[in-house]
Image (cartoon, rainbow, N blue to C red; front, side, top):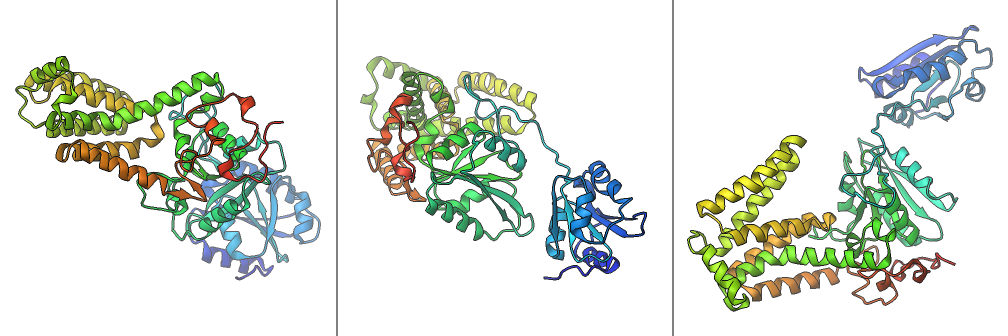
Length: 477
């Protein structure tokens, strides 16, 4: 690792070898006493106005010695560091922090005048609440850490910065409460981050693959959120959080499946209301996954499952349908998935019009033409709505719904039962960072059931969840 020599021309030439890009600029100037300075900076991501005010102007009349400590006293930038290594200096330049070199000094000064382009802090569209905080994370890790720091006014909050990505050098902030989070989990997270060998990290979702104990699992094993209040609440329980520069989605581990049936609003409404909405989400998800499959299985294998009046209605609806029940349901499901994908990807206002056209015009026309039956449209529509009751599990449950439908059309109710048993077995044998995925139900933990599908009052939750094994159990005195 080569260090700067103190010879300005030679040092500039060495930096230019490492950073030959045309947007890496050099500004050379001389003080009144004849001391030569040179600033090297990345033009697009450096605030040149701040650079002039805080670095260049104070040095135009500099009369001291060519030493980093003396020169630093003249600068007005609040962020100043010194460095000798060319490799580290080039990394700082690429991060937007200009480097000041001057004749006769074997240290360079790094000034924190990075230009940050960010959007405003606003409520995330994926997690809208009626009661509670409406702030959401954005793509800048410094602003995100400030949103967390504002909620924890304690020195126990640790934010360890880790760089991930050979070329992107993406900053990942590992956030935890010292004395509350388990040391083993913190060490495991840092170890897994250190083992990642990849060129580029564009989003936090890339890290979930490396943090999961089963990288190719159907179910996710890392918690996600866009809201600082949820993120801080999980840290306060003893979890470890990760904020990734460039991503508004924060990660938390260990992750429990029950987390996605909970909402931040559950903690700002009466406990009985929170319990009702959690059970309602579970019911909606079960209906969304199983309703199309049981409808097809009943038509093909078990007509006696339908009440007589409902059976007569269905028989009249499907009399002239040219497709089998399973093929009909599969076609309607695929059309729904295509419409959903198209409405998301298309421009906002066009997407809204497309949803209306697809739902009303296309559905009504298909029924009138005799291609599909009215019950099939109703069942798939209700199933599609039910999936969005638990939006964080849409990717997994939509695939599971399709699998159930295919099995029901070929094997019937026995196939549905077998696949359900396999899924349950898979869930109860999955764990990550020492926490079982389906806890506190398996293994059963009576203490943690008080904030699972059933929500107790705050006064009944004086201690943190037992399954997280926090060294500091008590949170309410």
